[in-house]
Length: 524
Ligand code: NOJ
Image (tube, rainbow, N blue to C red; front, side, top):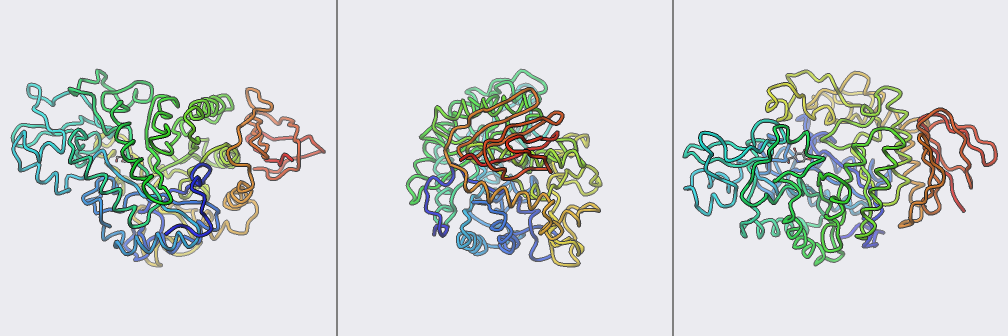
């Protein structure tokens, strides 16, 4: 089934896609954890917001050692999230509202509870069961090499017979061996399973990690994830991943209309990321270089220019993202409090004015900040434990979102229920209910900006108009956009003003843009 009124097979090239972190979006049964029926009940919010699609984080059977990114059965639904029928119903409801649905696929590792890994544990070294994972003999008394887990500590755990298995994340997330044909066949079948159920595409977890360098050589650095963004590691961004995505693309293209995939690929620069979106590979890759840029005209301009220069030769649309479930929320990154909020308002207009596709993270439309003071007793991210209780991890951006002013869970769950992470005092005023209808609210700014964005010429090039060390002014088709990072500045607008992130003075074609403010105007 396809979304109604949405027949454009190139929809993804300029789509706005909203990330639903399932555990924290809406809880239908009061167990404190979000679920699929909860998402179904809140689809109206997404339709009214004006997004094109939702990406739902993993809801598959899982021990939840990493919030569901430890998948024990990639073809099922964990009972805490609902049933396969709920998944079917959710896809059907979304489509009837004109929303497409993208689901996560986690091909770099399984859960240790996956039947494959359970078989591997009891099988002999060198057996086909072990060959689905990366089991190796140790080096002396230690692990086979110096690789570090992204979550802290070594990336290897020993088993009783003396072999070690690789896990780039938690020890409960063993990496699968993509040089084993059975692994390749299995994941192609998993893709087909969800495509046959009706999903419109996939977000590929750790897309840059599936293939490891031959011989598993040492990385040679003792702080590998501190350097990962500037340097290539023997387990990330290896050439062999591209062949896998070519075979996935053939499956996606075999459906009518063709389905899409977006890579979670952390690479050292936009040119490396663009290699994942060559014409016969994936459709999109998250632009983490944009997310990592400081709130600075120079830095953001450099990323925008670099991204467009890297994506246009391969014919792929750029993507833009400011927040997700793995990073500190951008209101907080940009200065927190009123300053962070003001910058987030301006950042929204900047992001939505850029050519390509945009990913939003649930709650950013409400201006939710990172919750920095969650009690230690509630922290669940494996980073907290694996860092020896020194890094709090990512729970602060995963706090369940507030829908209503009242209620024990602020509408996240039924009255009387308690969310799995506590919502801070004051979130009642950030709720969807509190912001709806208030023209000054961030939520209404999102709604208006998303509505106006629908009229922007798709696929037009970005043209820089003026710019300085503290000012970005550009044109994207029929839309003009200016963002001022420094003291109030005058900008010439060549058409009617459409929207500003703060109140501005305008006199004819002269717009006085205060600090940390953005404006849109229409270009005839
Ligand atoms: C990236 C996911 O976004 C993150 O949440 C997860 O912990 C790791 N991949 C491991 O699957």
